Each structure stands twice: as C-alpha cells, then as structure tokens.
Image 1 (cartoon, rainbow, N blue to C red):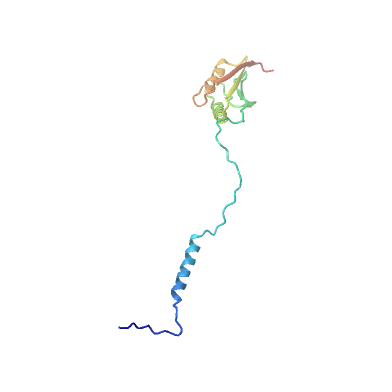
Image 2 (image 1 turned 30 degrees about the horizontal axis):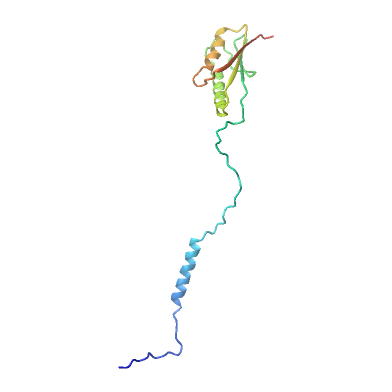
Length: 149
C-alpha cells in the first residue's frame, strides 16, 4: 500500500485568536506584578545610637529657702505660706518634677536649703521630710543659714 500525501492548500491559514489571548494575558501579568511607584530616594540621615554615654544636659541645683515667717521660697518663688500646716504639697510637687527631670538627664539632683535663723525648726524639718519622700528621693542636700534684711 502506498502512502498518500495530504492535499496541499494553496494558502495555509493560521488561527491568531489564541496568540492574541496569550499576549494580553502576558501584558496583564506584567502590569500587575510591576511597581508603578517610584522608589524612595535615600535621604542620608544618621540615626542616633545607644553609646552608653550620658547626655550633655545638666540640671542646675535648686534653692529652697525658709524665711522667718515660715514661708517656703523655691528659686525665688513663694510656694507654701501656711506655717501652721505641716504638709507642703506645692514644694513636694516641684521637687518630684525636679528629681524626675534630673534623673532623665543622668545628673544628680542637688538642693540647697537656706533657713533663716529666726525660722521655726519644724518648718525646716518639713522641708527635709519633703526631700526624703520616696517619690522625690533627693539625698544630695546642702544646708546653709541666712538672715533677712
């Protein structure tokens, strides 16, 4: 038996519809997977690192005065004026703030207590008790005396 040759067409046809579908699928794939946002530029900033060194900020010492009337003066600002009251809430609040800020800057809080010679001893003890409060915890204290003119 002899093989037969298939009949030859004069103009062979190629179906292009499947090739168009594949090309659109590839186009959609590359559009979806590509990033359209431009990349961020390098700003060249240096971030701070933990070197273990303390800060360069130092907190000044605080001056607490007890005058002859029993008024407590903190850095030339009158705080607690009722000498009969043993509580010193304004002084305690200021001392807590001072102590926290000093510890945040890695420096020691220091207080100078200046008491008038005519002041009652109990008011001086009230100031010392405020310094020894557990929330304050200031133990670097200098004591001096003065006389009002």
